[in-house]
Length: 342
Ligand code: CP
Image (cartoon, protein in one colour):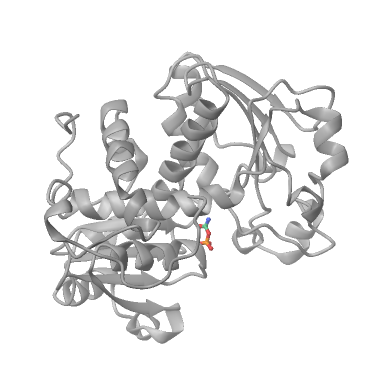
């Protein structure tokens, strides 16, 4: 398999709009090759000497750490800036200047920032590839890729494919950037049925609805979870309270769409896979994905987070042009490793 339709080396990864199906399948092909390294069956030092600038100007646990882990697993080193107040952006420095400076210290940059379009603006000043780790309510392309990779694996385990998938997305579809990016990627496939369940105030933006309908897919929009939903995937989301103009406004929607064992059993099929980009809000007043589903075999949320490392490793290897030489730089693993379920 080759990446004839997309030249990854040296490219910024800013939006899922950059990808077609061939490019996605090539990323997933490389991600599959990363599994033995992520499982510590063997190591590669293909990026030994390379530096990732990991710039997170907005809170993150899994995206920030998995970018760093992915780079370390390829043998590279990570330098981090965390939080707006700890950077010179707080002194009025522009994104352009920050990019000019930090790209002189790094071979590649991963970045998250609260403003939509900020990572693209930053990339304009960068001398090295920039990967979008989430820009405001706009996009989260690497999350969408890991979600799609997970969906493909879950479908395969049920004997199906992404083509023909029925996905139900629940919660804050207005501010949830992961669902925006995922809808665009899924729209590249055939005969997808999207069931979008949200309060009308938090409905999916028109631009995303257009991408769905222009792709000829089936679209069902509702403001309540009712009856039986014949979905293969239930993709639950958190109310993105950090994007609301006031806490009171966010509070209106908190806890409105909960999923627990009883609700899941009432509305979904026994085969429906449960996904969430995480973090889930586990406070009692929200609790959109209850702990009573933690042992459910269809709960894929931690398979998603594990898959995120594979997909981010693949993106680093591709953008730095080393995807075909990883084996030449392999080393044995000298320490005891836990049994992995990856
Ligand atoms: N899914 C996701 O972006 O999680 P973090 O905010 O922890 O990075």
